[in-house]
Length: 350
Image (cartoon, rainbow, N blue to C red; front, side):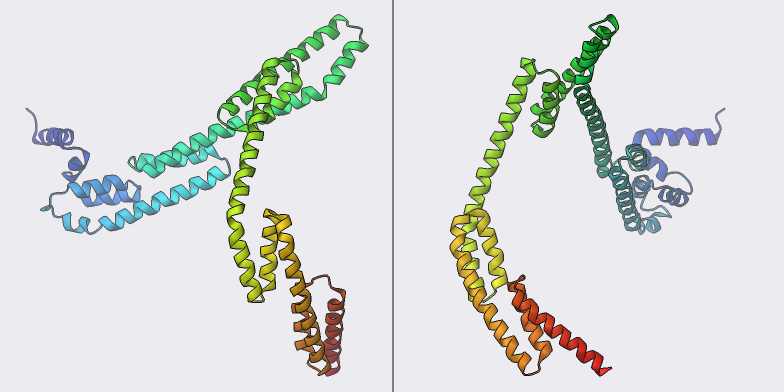
C-alpha cells in the first residue's frame, strides 16, 4: 500500500512536470529559506520565478513580493560584476579563466543574454588570438628561411653537391615551399575578408620564398592594387571633407582676428595649411603682421610699466608677448632681466 508521503511526492513531481519548476518550487515547504539560499548562490532567476508563481494566499507571498526589487537589483549587480571581471581577464588574454567565470554565471542565470553574448565574444577573441599567434610564428619562420637561404646555398656549393648536401638542401627547400604555401593561404583568406595589411605581410614573404610562383605573384599584385585604390579613395574623401571645412575655417579666422585672439587664429591657419597650403599663405601673412604689431605693443607697454617700477606687471605683459613669439630673443632677455630684479628684491627683503 502506497503511503501518504509517497503519494504527496508523486503529486509534486506531477505538478512540476505539468506547471513548470517555478510552480513546483512554490508548492514546497520552507519556500522563504529556499529563496534566500538561491539568492545567496546567485540563482536569482529561480528565486524570482518562484516568487512570481506563489499563490497570493500563500503565507510568505507578501514578504517575498516585497523583496522582488531587491533581488532584481542584486541580479543586475551580479551580472555587471561578472562582466567587469571577465572583461579584465579578456584584456589580459586569460581566455580560460574568463570563460570559466562566465560559464559559472550562466549556469546560475541561464536566461541572461548579456552573459551569453560576452561568452561568445570570449570564444571569438580567443580564436582570433590563436590565429594571430600562429600567423606571427609562420611569418617569423618565413623570415628565418629567407635569412639562411644564402648560407644554405653556400653549403651546397662548398660541398660540391654531395649526397648529404643535396639532402640538406632538399629538406630546406621543402620547408620553404610549405611555408610559402601556408602564407599564401593566410594571405588569400585575409584578402577575401578585406584585411589587406595582413594579406600584404603574408604575401610579401610568400613571394620572396617562391618568387617564380605566378599564383603568389598575381595575388600579391591584386593586394597592392587594392591597397593603392583604397588609399586613393581615402585621400579623395579626406580632401572632400576638408573642402567642406574651408568656409568654416575662414569664418573662424575672421572672428578670431576681430576678437584679437591671435592664438586661436594661429591654430586655424595651421588647419587651413593642412587643406590648402597655397591659399593659407595670405591668411598666415595677415596673421603674422598682426602678431608683430601686437607683440610690439606688448613690449612697449611692459617697458613703460617696468620704467615705473611695476616689475611683476611688466613681466606678465612680456610673458603674454612671448606666447605669440616664443623664440624672440628680445622678449626673453626682458623677462630674464625682470626675474633677476625680483629675485634680488626678495634677497634684499630678507
